Amino acid sequence: MADWRELYQDLILDHGRRPRNFRQPAGANRQAEGFNPLCGDRIQLYLKLENGVISDLGFQGSGCAISTASASLLTERLKGKTAEEAEAVFQKFHQLILRPEAAAPAEPDLGKLNALAGVAQFPTRIKCATLAWHTLHAALDAADAPVKVSTE
Ligand code: ZN
Image (cartoon, rainbow, N blue to C red; front, side, top):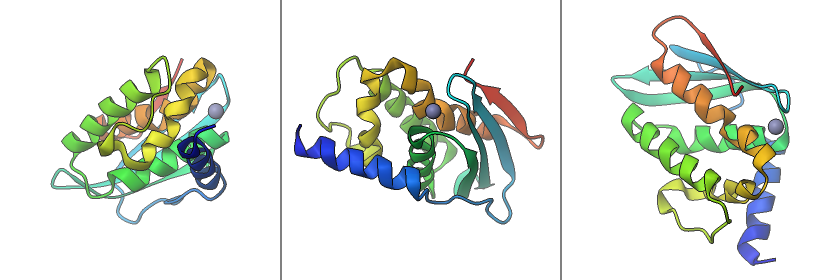
């Protein structure tokens, strides 16, 4: 097993056990709930969107290590980004995760999110890894009312 894979596995375990930004940020003005019935992962994602910039974000909920780590890494990666930048990261992440074979780390824009590349080898876990991202999408699109999304 290549060193970077071991490193990535540690990163996922760490974020799965000790998720970052596991909270509802003060002043959050966008919110969405995501549910992955295949695995039972459930998250609430909160954004504070100011002048098109995600000035703060956080999540709560319960799920497997992959869904939790993915949400945690997402919140770290997107803080301070514009909604458009977040969308671009989402597209790149989606490509990474749907790639048939796990390549070596190759997407500098994704940073630590590259750790989830190995999920591409486990189709049943792809929805765990993408749940937070679909929820993000819904939260960015939401006006005032909280929305719910499901991976099914
Ligand atoms: Zn899961």
